[in-house]
Image 1 (cartoon, rainbow, N blue to C red):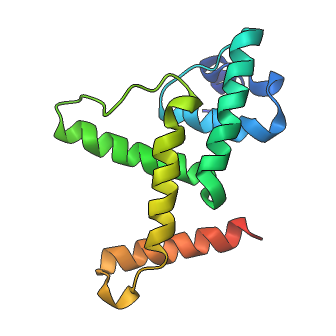
Image 2: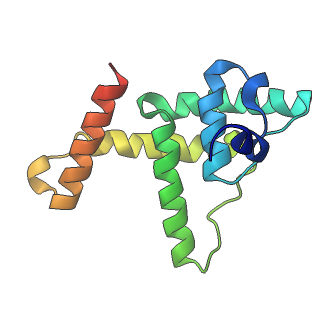
Length: 134
């Protein structure tokens, strides 16, 4: 989905500061939320998004995507019940900070102890980090 259709679904993000747009977009898309349109609501989301950006660390919005996979896995094992509610970026700060730490820890594992699947994921994460760091 692109352009006007995406803007209608996720709200117009042009009123949000450039630094928070990718994070707000990721939260809106992965958790099916519509960013607020009121001045007060936008201010609240901007503040929360900046906290979430800090929690994501070097992983950026990739950490949000990875956490959503964990979120889905949890729901699959619990009859569709979510591990917690998500009302905006602030709802994700603690869990994303933990997920980023886990992702960071996975990069320091002894690769000789990894399964083929884990090793491929490890290599993909290394590649993504190299690309994001330029």
